[in-house]
Structures are given as structure tokens and as C-alpha cells.
Image (cartoon, rainbow, N blue to C red; front, side):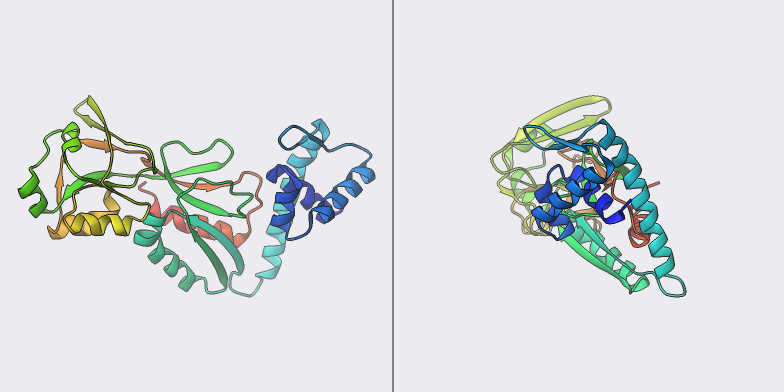
Length: 296
């Protein structure tokens, strides 16, 4: 069987349509359609059927897809083994990371990874969306979410600790909230979806409390949010990794520290596609991120 035709078929199933597969394969839709037709004619069976929204594999197509992705994965691994013989590890990895975690923590780790693996090229996208990894051509995504999407392989790396904090000057003027619901009386700084209220939950000794807030400053850029908190604009609800240095230095004071705070994302996950055949470079980066980010 022609491996190129098999690769086209697998990409069509992964992408759900020929246009997305063509973009991933960097070719034309007509070429993808032609390759599929030749594969079906050579096998004498229909592999895909069109639904109202996308292309789906037939019963035989589903079986071929499962075998095909394993064949392609093994072929890619064999190719990487041969090409890397006697040389440093080579390859290309497209990685998507959240903006806050990416700038504050992952940038330094990825720079170190690149130093250790100079012949691996990294394409790093800073994005908070839990997007379609196939259509975006993403090999690995790191995301802070409560529940990962069903269509991906999700590896939990760590719990994300959220903290409530403000400058001593702000608290001296505006007062210190004693409960989570008291935050509604303060200027709040947090990441939140535009047009939606922020839902903050807390657990204090088994007693649960939940409040909806309308942040006075909101952004997906946690460096900006941190600057707003340090600038005394209000009370921040931020992940601990974003503000830990300022808390340690006393520039910012942590409040409601006995509460377990939960916002919209409480876990750090590494996401990959189940059908994506991973190169050796991708596997090495995955192992590096698991070692570096896992809390055990």
C-alpha cells in the first residue's frame, strides 16, 4: 500500500474534511481528493462517507484508519532512528502554550530544552484556546483547564493553585476581605471571558462558597494582570506561579490563604492527538515537559 496515500487518508479522518487535511499536508484540496479516490479504487471499497458536517470513515475505513495510524507512527519512528544515527537528535515540534504560563514559566524551560537539543526546531504558539490540535497542526499543547477535551490524549501534570492577593497599600485603604463573597465589594483583577462574569469558588474546611464577580481589570495576559495588582489597582485572583515572587518579597500580600480557591482552570495538562504519530523529537520534548512540570 502507498504510504503517501495512507497518510492522506489518515489526515482526512483526523481533520474531518479535505480542506483541513490539505492545509495540514500543505497541498491542494483537489490533490487530496484525487489521492483518496485512487486509494479507494485500488482497494475496491469506499473508505469515507459524507455527513451533514464532515467526512466520516465507513466500517472498513475505520479499521484501515486504526491500522494506518499505527503503520505511519512506526514508519516515522523508523525514519527518525535512521536519520539520527550517529548524529544529535533532530526534528521539528509545533508546541502551543498558554500565554501566562508560557511567558512566566515555560519560556525558560523551552530555552533550556533548545540549548540541550540544538538541532530540534521549535515552533511555539502562545494561545489560551483549547483549539483543534489537528487543524492547527499542533504536536503538543499545554493547557490549564478543569476537564480536558474528549478527543485528545491528556496527561495531568500538576494542580494549579489560585491565590487572592493585593498590595499592602490597597488593603490598608480598602480593607481586607474575610470571605470570598466580600470580593464583590472590591476592584478585582483576573483573567475572565469577555462578556461573562467571573465565578470564584472556595473550600474552607469542607464549607463551600461561590461568588460571581465582574472584574474591573481582565486580560489573558498574566504579566499585565500581575502589573495591575502590583500597581495597587485592586485584588488579584491569579495562579500562584504568576505572583509567587512578589508574595515572597512582600510586595504583594496573600489573603484568604486558608481558602482553597477555584476559578475556571484548576489542572495543568499536556495534550496530544491519539492518532498523531510522534517523532522522536516530539517524544523527547514530551518527556522533558513531564519531568519539568509534574508535581509528582
